[in-house]
Length: 201
Image (cartoon, rainbow, N blue to C red; front, side):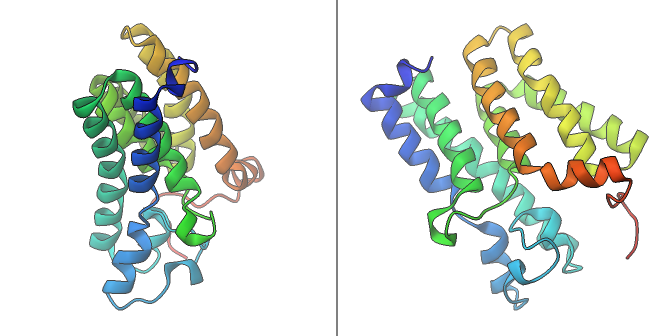
């Protein structure tokens, strides 16, 4: 798979994915809503979870959807105009663009929404599996971060079992990056200080 990502079509997909993935919807939407720079509150992150700290649930939902769909769009456009390898590269680019957007000095979000969006574009049943696991884990433990980490850990195996080995290999890399980006959350989970879903304050 890695060799196939060096083709002109795949490199074009990578560039397209990065361009779309680097659009900081959380920052754009909060500024348009008159809430200032979302990076100045909470974790300083541009993702939906931090947007939710503004108290605007609708805005957080919009951020989540947009961050997902930019990954889906990158994959579908690359697949339509090129091939599956280009779609894989576009997914990688979208994920990296969200994590490290050039417009924000390479400081972006943690990647969960875009991770799901890329998955939706590549192998949509795997996205449903991710969502189901997230819901169960979130209901059982009430930790959004833990639910995402567990669901992501299962995703490469789910892709393999669904007959998508190249996507599974890509998602081994994306999952590793996702876990690295969630190091602060993992530390808080281990310390028992991670905020629970629905908790106030």
